[in-house]
Amino acid sequence: MLKLRPLDAACPIEQQLQNSATPVVLVNLFTVDEADTPALMVAWEKDANWMKQQPGFLSTQLHRAIGGSCIAVAQAKSLIVTPGLWILIPAMAATGGSGMFLSTSRKGRLVEAKKRRMAFIAANGLLVLVPCAIILDRWAATGTFDTSFYAVQALELVAGAINLALMGLNVRDGLRMSGRLRVAPASVKRS
Image 1 (tube, rainbow, N blue to C red):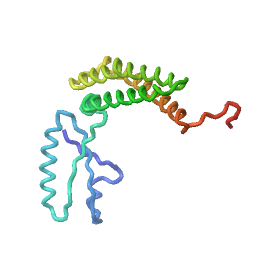
Image 2 (image 1 turned 90 degrees about the vertical axis):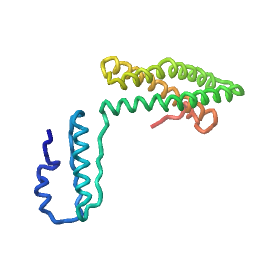
Image 3 (image 1 turned 60 degrees about the vertical axis):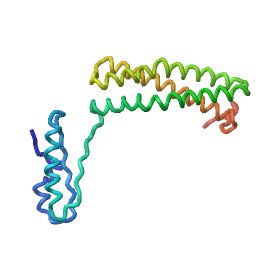
Image 4 (image 1 turned 90 degrees about the horizontal axis):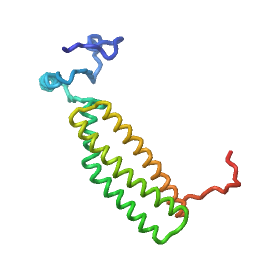
């Protein structure tokens, strides 16, 4: 059921229509049940076509907020799997492979730490993050947003945060190895 409610109760639409200032920008906020969306779209299109015929009318646009909706979550989860995983997995493999190749000519504590982290990052990605992404995509596509969905989502967020932290450490150590990041001497006091 359509209910008109002003965005600003201090200046309702009836009062605004009495103002002769131009140009006019009209914003209508609709909160509609998902089941009523098709009927709203038909009514909006009919009204928009009528408005387009009025003298001085320039344009009309309809914006739909999708943030937080089940549809938005399902779309985001789908994009993570396709094309996301198809791009991310080869990119990560190339990064790890090039790092391993470059490390063959270097030795030391930083190189060994980077190798250990990269092995963990790869295992975490392939054994935790990829399966979580696929499972969450399938559940979101069917509208299954239950406790299991949020538990797997939490696992994915924790595993992703761990990988990001480890990748950050690898970047830091790479910068140290290249000489672009200097380690402050232990005797220097920070204030």
